[in-house]
Length: 125
Image (cartoon, rainbow, N blue to C red; front, side):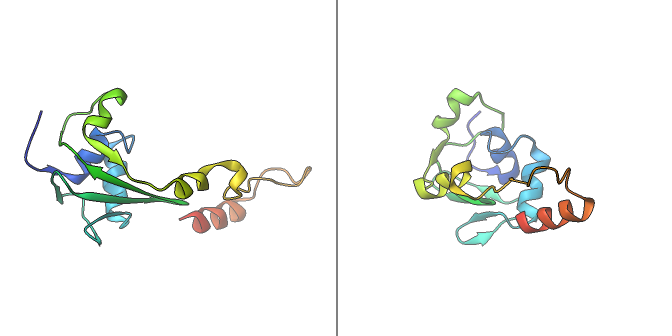
């Protein structure tokens, strides 16, 4: 379904950048979705030609809107609606060998405590 403008939370969910519309809305509310240099609310309208920046720590993704849809599309059809402009050095941050994810714990220390989990969660956000 082609439209002239679509809500950003619906669009991000429809092109499979988020697993649910509520998680897309939450990312907007946390100022992790940026259009035109400004963080946007979930109800912000997106149009063809807009550049969307999405911060999903530790990576910042950049996309160009080629087409609009409000209905969720198959993974093979996403390229009709979106172009990935994310630089390769940003994409390499997500690889385990890059050091961004140091999930190594010394042997015998067991599971992280609640305090350690909170600290790690706050660090990643």
